[in-house]
Length: 380
Image 1 (tube, one colour):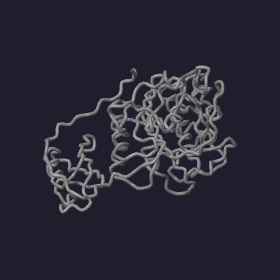
Image 2 (tube, one colour):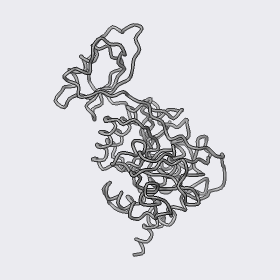
Image 3 (tube, one colour):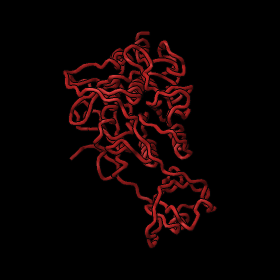
Image 4 (cartoon, helix red, strand yellow):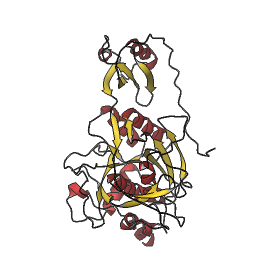
């Protein structure tokens, strides 16, 4: 019924191995990296012998994910084929601070005006730029989003479309690219191509392995920007390697600093050098109290009392660094639509055009993201 080209499940022809299940055994999901010269087909047999269930191969990482018995007699970590092992940790979206449900005639939200996105629209509206919302999905039947949602993937169930049953992904998508159609709201880049990469369930949680699969999907499908409005505190070599590969593929990754209001290390993936880390400001140009700040911050953007799209064709006001990230993603899409830039060139353009406020560099990075530079460039 839907016209969207949802991704079909991948198939990897691993050998079939029949293993008798271990009774009364608890399992834990792990990611197992193989050594570069090791064949996945041969390692598959050995890992199955450990009593593993649901074993799947991640081609991009040369790794397996699966459920391993907690009290296995075989310590697979000492196997000569294995490079290292990580637990498949749980990741959560940055839970926003919820406000009112709103239904009004079309407005340009204060955040879009503050970053001067509307000043850039006569020059560019983000047309043709492929942006992935790595989140809870998108309510792609929303009238303010329907024309711009071009596809996506559901990592939780590959046979179902990536529809949003939480609302977070839909809200983020509206900030990035709600259509200018006289209803509801307008996004920063109202003609951008949006892709719903659903890794988070209706409760806003995801397995790290599903996020990794989502980034791999973005690499394979030539996504240019990934909006990452989520975070976690535990360092992961697996995830860091995935971020590195996406960066090498030329993808711009924009991530939320976190909503804990602490100072020092940001949450991952914002802490990684390959991402653009974003904090939140309010309508008084003050850093939001909930923003996690630190030396890795690149930019600040509006993140308090942000009106955007929601499920059931409605609109809602939310606050959080998730919302701030989406403003930067929208401006990045405007810039990529106007200029051919590498991911590092775009980072520098965003930082150099930012407008500082009265806050430390730990809190704002280079300043508040600013799209008016595109309008000035057109005049010059």
